Image 1 (spheres, one colour):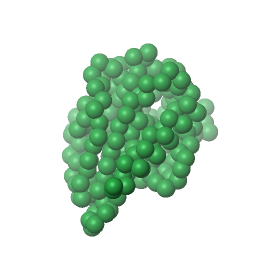
Image 2 (cartoon, one colour):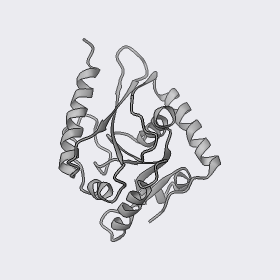
Image 3 (cartoon, one colour):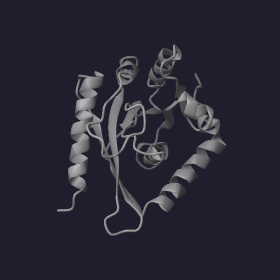
Image 4 (tube, rainbow, N blue to C red):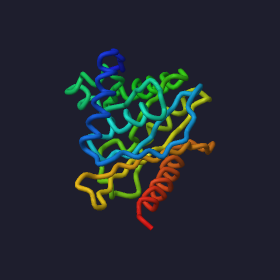
Length: 204
């Protein structure tokens, strides 16, 4: 597997790129997040609907969460974009023996209070209209090996155009606090949150 690195130049570059890229792509970016993450490692679970998702999570972290950023990527994608490794990306190779190593690595990161790991349990990019979202089981293995102080956050990012030329991006974040942490429990709760976010997108 490919482990994450944090080279200061690339960390600053991706902070800059995320901010400017999203500002160019979207008319505006709104964030609804009141999570207090100090003193706890964070597992951030999001919807995977676009190439921009990692940068969306990066921007969310810069603006609200303020953690050392790590993100799980498919190894074939990271291998062809190895510069992403220098700003916190690490790999997982589905269908290989190294999957266990990647999941263990993600868990180990979540023993340090300054760390955040971003995962997209869908495993692949899917249409934003596809519901319910289906989670693969690797996420529960990550949680099982993490610190008992782990904070699990769900985020949903939704674009809407309304009357603008560019889409408006809205990000909403909640903490998952239930004791049940199986993939099926997480999936069910995430889909409830996703549906609530979609409902809130509809103008009254």
